[in-house]
Each structure stands twice: as structure tokens, then as C-alpha cells.
Length: 68
Image 1 (cartoon, rainbow, N blue to C red):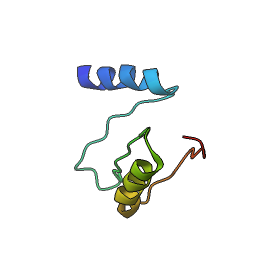
Image 2: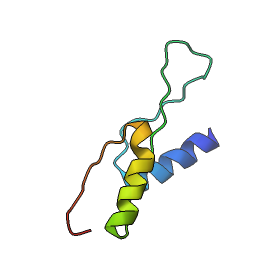
Image 3: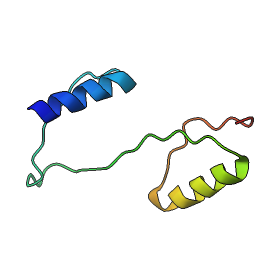
């Protein structure tokens, strides 16, 4: 319960949270996925290197400005 509350409080700092649920790993009807939100800042060569490393994990690029 305390861990769930801590996670909820941390999430609220990032995005609006509408609902938090606790699922058991043993439940075969639940599909678990990992998600990471990354902000990559650096020279274009470093950003390209990071994107290449992530390519195996099917990344979704949210914002890719030309001047960053």
C-alpha cells in the first residue's frame, strides 16, 4: 500500500494520474509491459547513438526538434 502510494505521488509529478491499480504477477489475464520516458539532450551524434541503442525496443519518439 505504501509503495503504491509512493509511486502514485511520483507519477503525479510527471503526468496527470486518473487511476492506479495493483496487479498480481501470477494473473494470466494481465499483460505486463515496461515503459520508460527519456529526455535525451546532447549533440546530434550522441542522440543518434541513443536512438540506435533503443531501436531493438521499438521506441516511440514523441518530439524530435531539428535544433536540439
